[in-house]
Image (cartoon, rainbow, N blue to C red; front, side):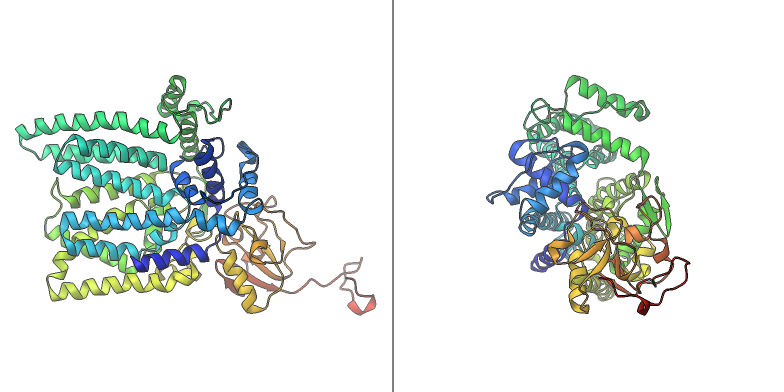
Length: 559
C-alpha cells in the first residue's frame, strides 16, 4: 500500500490535466456545491462530485455557468484562468487516489475471504502494479470510481449469496445505485447478477431453491427501491437540473425500445432530468460511434477485436502469463462450480468484456477497466495452489517479477502511455492504439522538461488536450489542434522545432479541414518528449516572385 501511494503520487505530480478532467473538475464542483447539473449532463455526477470534494475548504472562483456548447470554454476558464490550476488539479485528484486504495483493499478482503490469506496478498500485489489501475487511479474521471462501485456491488451480492438476508440485500441495492450514478455502464451489473443468481438457484436442491427464490425476490425489491433513491439523493431530490432550466432532449425513434423507455421516464419524471439526458446521450453516442484507431486503421464504429488487442498490449507480460497460468490451475482444480467465487468472477469478467467489445465507443482501454478486478481475483484464487509447491512458487515469483518490474520502470514516463513489448513499448504504442490509451493531453509537463534538458526555448506545437502549455512555461506557436487556450498560429507551418500530439499526427481527428500533418507522418521523428513527436526542420528558403530561390544576402534582413 505504501508503494501504491508513491505510484499514485508520482502520477498526480507528473501528469497534466487530461481531456475529461477539465470538465469534470468544473462541473463536479457545481454539482456538489450548488446541485447545478446543467454542465456536463452527459455523464453521471457521482465521480465528479467525489473528486470536487477535494476542493472544499479552499477559495474557488466560479465563473458564470455556460451549459451546452459553451461548457468546455466555461470549464477552461474555471480551472485554468479564474483559479490556480495546479492547486485545483492536485486537490481534485486526492479523492480518486483514496478510492483506488479502497479498491485494492476490497480486492484483498474479497480474495482473502473466498480463498485465504495467500490469495489476499496476491490480489494486492497484482493490483498495486497494474499499469491501467495506476494510470486511471489518480485521475478525476468516471473510470476508476465506476470500477470500484461495480466491484463493491458485486462483492455485496456475493456476500448475500452466502447468507441471503435483508441487510446484504439493502447493501446490494445501495451499492448498485452508486454504481449507476458513477457510470452508466454500472447497469450491466443487473444482467450479470441476475445470471449469477440463476446459476446459483439451479445448483440448489428443490426445497432450498424455493427459499432462495423468495430471498431473491426480496433482493430485487430492495434494489428497485434503493437504486432510484440513491440517484434522486445525489441529484438533490430535484427533477430539473437547475430551477427553471432544462437540458433534456427527446430520444430519437432510432433508439427503439430504449428511446421509448427514456421518453416514458421523462414523461413521468421517474428519474432526474439530467440523469435521463445522460442516458439518452450515451445511447445515441454508442449508436453513432466515435473516431477510433487500431493498428493504423481509423473507424467511427470500431472493431470487435479492439479491446482484445488493447488487452494484449496494455497489460504487462507477467499479468498475461499469470492469467493463463491461473486459468490452467483453476480448471485442473475444478474450481468453476456453479456457486463458486471463481465462477462469479469469470462470468462478470467475460460479460463486461463482451459488452465493451460490442459497443461502438472504442476510445480507450479504460472502458474495460471494470474487468480487471475480476481477473485479479481469479489469478489470486490460484495462488494458494501455486505456493504449495516449489515449482509453483518459482512460477508465481516469475509472474510477479514480470508484472512488477515493467510497471515500476514505466513510472517516470506515466502509466497512461504504458505499452508492453508486444507493441514495442511506449515508443511503439502509437502503431497499435492512440487516444486515451496513449495521448489524453497529459504530457505537457514532460514536453516542458524535455525543452529544458535540450535547451529548446521555443517551438511549434500541435496539441490535443485541455491543458495550457503556458502554465508549464512552454513558449510556442500553435499549429492546428484541438485545444481550448487562445492559439497563436505561426505564419508558416513546420519550421524549427515542432512537437505534435500522436492523436493529431496520426489523423485520428481532422484539423484545418483535412489531414494537416500528413507531411510529417511521412518521415520518422527526430525525438520523443513524453508522447509528443519531435521534428527538427529547417526554415524554408525565401523565393522571388519568379519562384526561384532568393539569395538572403541580396536584401536587408527582416525581423
